[in-house]
Image (cartoon, rainbow, N blue to C red; front, side, top):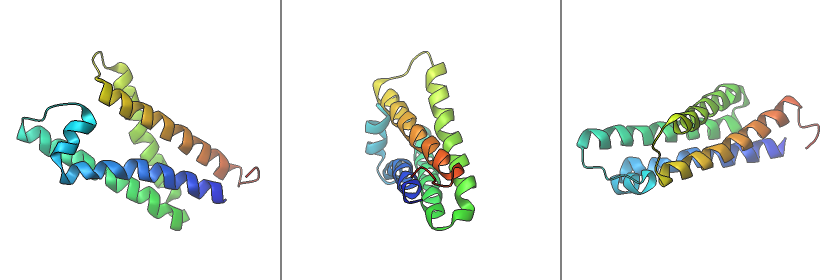
Length: 125
């Protein structure tokens, strides 16, 4: 099931990349298209960046530990679906957050396809 692992790798990288914001608050401002002038908001966003890194890391780890794949794919899928739902329900979303939502939609599609491949035991791939 080589394609399955490749799909998990791509989605894991998408989820790991925001960890840069944990180390660089300027990156958080660019990523979210907001000016962070409140230390408490910066703290929350840095923590959010770390959590994405952990989720992406867990998904990456599951490539080598298949017993973790159900947990990892479920957590990552719920995280991305929740963000997209919040964006859809929001009355005001800036272009940077819309871009993140589109990236998440892309990753959701990849992850859904990966799950399809896994359920079908790679018989098509």
